Length: 220
Image 1 (cartoon, rainbow, N blue to C red):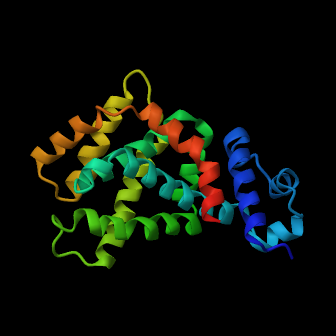
Image 2 (image 1 turned 180 degrees about the vertical axis):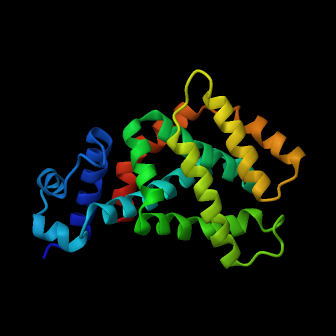
Image 3 (image 1 turned 30 degrees about the horizontal axis):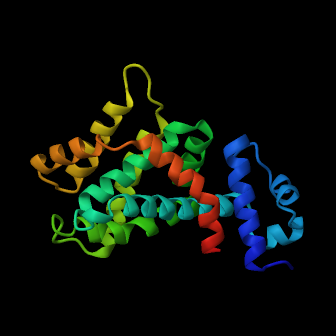
């Protein structure tokens, strides 16, 4: 069986390209195999179904988002809540930029394997970011917190912006909700929202998505 890292990387890069072009539901494993040049049997040996592919992809996207924001805020490394706010708003922005991307995120938050990747991936980050406010929380509490915050994120991702529910309003309502749940003081929430709205998220979405294919290559 073809189980080497280059085959896996090629499958993930091809799946990412097809999911973005045609959508998750419309993309089949056979099409991914054909476009990637990886034998179908080898592909199904590495990934038994599409959910496992999107599961791994979404973990890479989350980490790619994190690195984009980490570079952007390299001179503000101590401002953990700002990092969290910019990264989560970037995720909302990515979903808003394409309905196929919105579909990928919705899948990642709704299917058992992929949602567990999201929760496991984020729980330790939440502990690092919010432990000053949630002093009585252990890692299991942060895991449960991410289940709640993941529900909030999924709801905001799923509803497209329109002339009434603008992206500006989406940012405000989302950050107010999640930061309040994490017991962040009102004055800090207002300050964070104001700061977040100064960033060019169109540029950040482009930087993240343009760099995703090479990021996959570097990590697989």
